[in-house]
Image 1: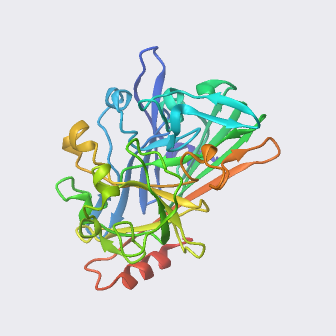
Image 2: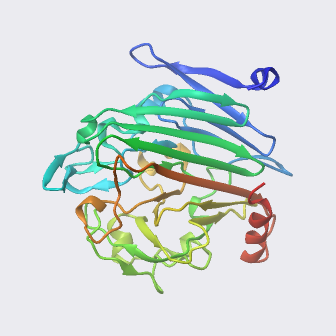
Image 3: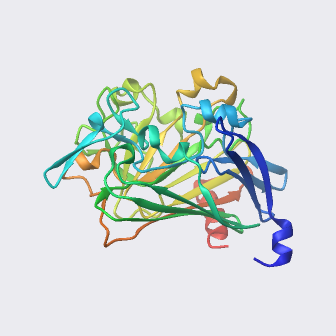
Length: 360
């Protein structure tokens, strides 16, 4: 980092934890996007998209550290070791049963009580456009075998935010790292999140039981409430289909088609802001934030669109494996591309604007 870059780096004390540990808020700003990231949990607290009409806040955030410590909705966190749920907080591998933290009833969610979204990350590198955070999860933490060393790199480039996970382990362990921002691209909590248009090139989804655990079935989406292959206003797609009603809305894993061109696209006609998410992972968890109605009613709702491996994969041999061995390097880039399209006349217009900003 040059001296001129160092003077432009923005970092402030966001608060102190009960043990006196300081939590920092780091701001990245390249003129197109402005992101604020906390060292506790790697929380993406704010992501502003500059438009001809001024900045638009794309994610939901909380006012202070105390609110994040008390948060049970995982707003904006880096998720690990395992995003989503593992049934019964246990799995068996190579003849050995492993017991994990149970933190959602009898099940394991988002890494359990020791999940990465509640941990303090170390800043390895910081410039005005780039932040590298690091974390070591020791063997046995949360019940997982193997020490896992992780870095999460946030980078701004043009109208894109790139989050890249790298991880290595010294013993075979399940790993499913993802990201948990709540997106309402309207930038206004009074505008319902389900007025956003969503496209997900997924041809199947994973039905769940009453505990939101995959049943093991991989079901075709055709013609139902989970068919987002053509962009649609979400409130118009949601129906009283049993899978939606059972979870009071969407909280399901969509299985991307083999020829999927991205993980998801989202557009708010209110603000004109559009977003594309691209990741090499085979699935996307779509959660529409219905729990916020009770826990954070002033925030409104936001959509969690989480690229990931299959939930509960260690307990379903026919799901793609999420096991990481010491011989492998875990690599998961998540690219968020933004554009502004006022009064789009067609979805093709939204796609063209996003294409124009990709790779900037």
